[in-house]
Image (cartoon, rainbow, N blue to C red; front, side, top):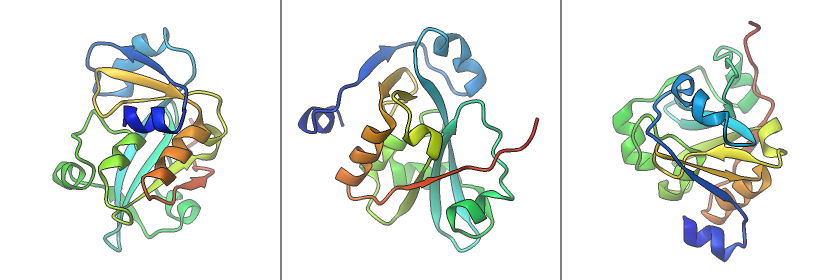
Length: 160
């Protein structure tokens, strides 16, 4: 992945930190890292298709409204063994960058529209002990470089 960042001349900032498994655990670390922080949902729709949806860390995604926004059937959370076999990562390390391990067409990756246009979003580098900061447009470029056709969508959120 770092080789691809270099080959595509994509600038990024790298941060090492203690392992974090949830958005809540990452809040202290996030405060010291500039940019938009993210969380990722690994989902399976009622038709059997897998989805990786990246949203702002604070977003409470409306899972009932999500299928209409991204063009799929009713969704539920994907199982860890499917995540590991399709993306090569385990829960806690989920990142759109894991699509480097996914066969094109095996998982549809979705990036929230606000993140896609952000100057800097923060994602895991395939492990939960680090954070990479890069532009949303550069995340999309990487996904396309790896043979994926990312979806950019306004992700519906629940009102708090």
